[in-house]
Image 1: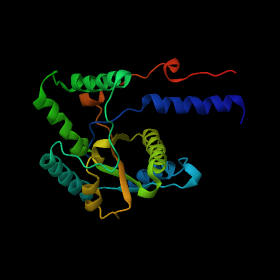
Image 2: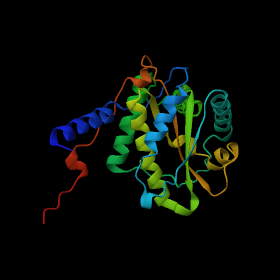
Image 3: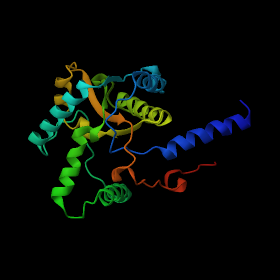
Image 4: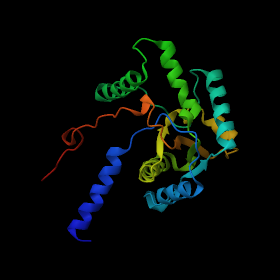
Length: 232
């Protein structure tokens, strides 16, 4: 590949990366089966440790999405703050990680009109996670329990590719750790074997560009904040 072609490919990748965002409001229309298949084909090209490709994916559509949405919302309302994840959640968010998380949260709340300290409104906004933000489709990403963190890392690469593939096809998507809050519930709902671990869910569909939740963008750290050069 010559340098000009390489830069062209890099520019295309950068455009997808910069235009992609977490979609929190969707149109009701389904994504065409051929488009979903293309997304999955692209995501299947993800890199993985020793080419294990540990991900197994459940994709909902039509009535399947609506049944899952209702069951998930009902479970969330019933369980409240009690969680049963297959992977340990962060113990705390400190320093710059806390700052970035707070910035992202306040950007969302400002966009949708939730004032600081309004616990009722913030709880209502949080419950939208379990309505899949109105998306017509959800993908549940699972990994074998035996692969531990290595399987989780591989599935993380898969999720990243999935999100970029969606963006390239004009499809909005959001990776949701919230869908993995109750691993045993999701496993039972989809009749998954006990040796599968629920890592994350992705809600996807065509974005509702008029919704305020889709009207802001998060910041990214400067390169020098993330990279240390070693020249000798």
